[in-house]
Length: 275
Image (cartoon, rainbow, N blue to C red; front, side):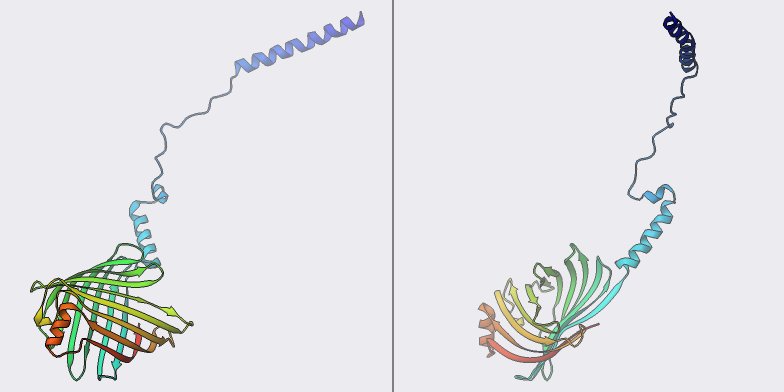
């Protein structure tokens, strides 16, 4: 009997509490989470423009580009400046450029002489980077020296091929309609950190005979050189070497008719420098 009374008493006390709990839950529902009126804008390339004006951020990006390689620079490179004691002649080749990573103004020059200037050329080119390692170049070339004067339109490339081969190729069209081409390549073989052996090769081609220039159609000439230089500093390296030149085909016929040698090998002493 006492057990039934105890259970009834517990039921009497617990039921109102449960009912009150359920009642209070239905009487005061939890508020629902509020949704934004509209979705935020999609992220753009420059997230900072959500907080600052586009003009202010563009100025900051331009300044960052200038401080990390976007500013203008310049360089003067004298690739070869040499004397050839065998025949008492001299020769040079080099270039200078001014500009940025993508666009540059390039000036190139090369030539040779003895008691007087034999042949020389100057090129003024616009250079545009088309990849991390190669530039396309276009401009004008002017010939100087004792031969006929020619002005050429020039179109070519310059860059660094895989395995660190330096390559340069150019097609020239003169105001007389002479079409020629030149291809050169070089490689620096580092024997030590300061002693470098540089093999270099170049060929010249012509689309037609130009007797007044001493050039015949086809493969006109080739040059092979081997220079050993010692770089006291990266910017300055004297060298010694051998240069072999040879003419071919119609160009050789023209040289033979003029009483000139078809090939020659010269010992050279010179310097390579840049700043």
